[in-house]
Length: 308
Ligand code: NCD
Image 1 (tube, rainbow, N blue to C red):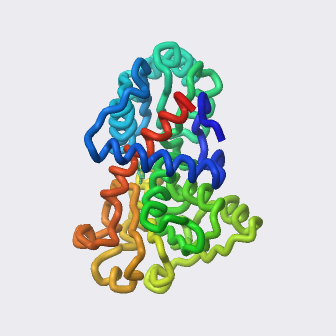
Image 2 (cartoon, helix red, strand yellow):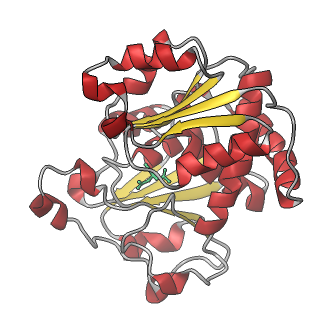
Image 3 (tube, rainbow, N blue to C red):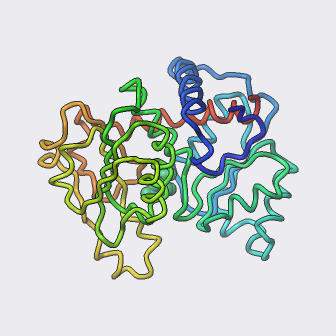
C-alpha cells in the first residue's frame, strides 16, 4: 500500500503487508534515531499539529519525528483556548486554512469524526492523533511495532487488553490492526466498560477467538501481551460515575507473578494507578520503551505519507 498523500484516519486502513512494510521502515528509522542522526527526507516540509485535547507524548512524538526527518513544525497544543475556534470558526475552515501553510496536519480532537471531517477539506494529508473515544491509530501502530520487535511476528499470540475498553481509543485501534494476524483476544474490563459490541462482532465474524472477562487474576496467566489502559476519566459524565471504576485493575508486583515470564506489558501512558511503579523495573515492562519506538514509527509514517 502506498501511503503517499494519504490521510491516516483509522487503523482499519492497514493490512498485514502494509503493516510489515511500515515496521521494516521503522527499524531503519530506529537505527538513525539511536545514532542521534538527523535525516533530510522531510527537509523543506512543514508539519502542523492541531491538538484540541491534552497530550504529552503524542504531540512531542510527532514533532520530534518531524524534526528528526529534517522538517519543521508549527504547533498549537491549546486549540480549544487560543485558536479561532473560540471565534466559532468551523473545524473544516480551520483545517482548510492550516493546510495552506503546512504539508501535513496531525490532529487530536475530543469529537469522533472531527479529524475525518477536517481531512475532507484539507489540501494536505491529515493524521489522526486521537478522535474522542473512537481511534488512535498511530498509538496502536507503535504498540504493535514494540511487540513485533521482540517477537518478530504477531501471529500465534494471545493479546490481552485490560481496562476501559469502551472509552479507550487505543484498544479500538489495536483490535483493528490485530485482526490482520492470527491472534487470540482476551478482553478484561468491568462490565460497564466492555469493548464496543460492533468491534467484538467484527472479530467474531472473522472467526477470531475472543474471550471477554472481568477477572484479571484469572485471565492474565494466558496473555502473551498485557496491554493495560487507564479508565478514561474525561469521558465520564460525573466524577461519581468515574469513581465506580477507578482502580478496577492494578498490575502490581504480586499480579506480575502470574504473568508469563516472556510476556510484554504495554501501556500507552499516561498511567494513573493501573500499573504500580514497582513494576517499571521488571524486564517485561515495555511502556517507556514504547515511547521511543513511537518516534521511530512516526518518522517512518511521516516519511511514507510525504514521500511514499
Ligand atoms: C492515549 C490517548 O490519548 O488516547 N494516550 C496517548 O496518546 N499516549 C491513552 C490515554 O490517554 O489513556
